[in-house]
Image 1 (cartoon, rainbow, N blue to C red):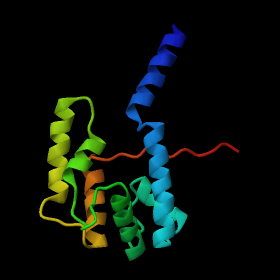
Image 2 (tube, helix red, strand yellow):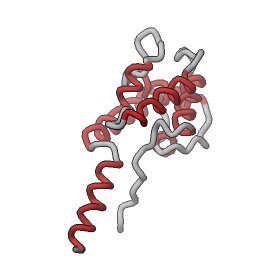
Image 3 (cartoon, rainbow, N blue to C red):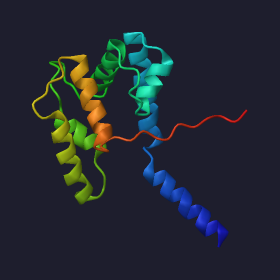
Image 4 (cartoon, rainbow, N blue to C red):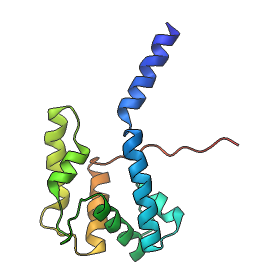
Length: 141
């Protein structure tokens, strides 16, 4: 019985988290943008996990770089709603309807020209629960 409960918890945890492949790509993208923008690792990780306390221009441009790398912005810095929706979509159609509404709310009337605008869109994604990073883990010593 304990095995069944433990297995159910493991399955739920795996289903609730982004896949390891997605997370690896995200981590590589973070590294690329950290180098390109010259942002401290601490600030990049804060943004990764929804902490917007680092509110300087480099932090904002880091988010824009990230959006460009994952094709949320095209080469003309136009927001790509379809790419965003596909990226965050789930197997549940009701969730996807709410997702599309939330994305539209965050990007409506905006473009990706300015770092601050893209940063605000990313913050809106957190506020609207469009995006949730995995919980940061601390290595045991």
